Length: 305
Image (tube, rainbow, N blue to C red; front, side, top):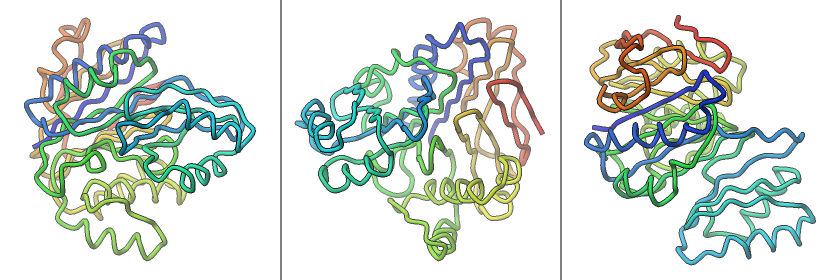
């Protein structure tokens, strides 16, 4: 059992409240998962050509993020914006992203890259969702939309790496409630195409499959229709990209999900109690997403197909 949450703010004036609303939603799903949690927020976009935002996790509690960025500045001769919080940091190095990635790989073996993109920031760890929200000040996040997850592990280990969201590709993340019965065959098929896996988690197989389809040229709807054919199991999937939130349930729709939408936002959760605190939710259109229906919302419009 796990809990998923998603929120897209239609009103730009409300973006400073993204973290506050999202944190209440995440903590509201703690009863569906309390061994680990995570949240991906789509914040201010990096506009410079070739520059990317990196979300980093350190397996060492004593890491000195200021020293790391100082060494990177000197070696790569570039400016770096740093936002550090305990064992997490978000950096924006104003240099080629591939060179930054290689520098981190070669010089900082204790540092893991949680995400790369123009706007995505990812925070995830082991612990109760309320503790994680407090630890990383998730209430302080601002931006256009977010995806979150509370995990109660039913397969694979309880570690930060197995916590959701799973991020693969630029600005792409996925959270999952349910279980897949064919993650190993999906993995073998994708590995034959040269795709690398970081964990043995079934959610990573779904994330890598969808990101691969998008990279091959599918739009979100086409990729999700392919997922209906390839993914076997019970699932509710919530996907975030730089511009979109997408939601699907399997053909039996046995994993719960509810959507609340009004003029100000679209909010998604496994159970309604996670949405109850949102402003004006009493006047929102509240509905249960249908099995094998594809729901896609973006910053400019709302589409359900």
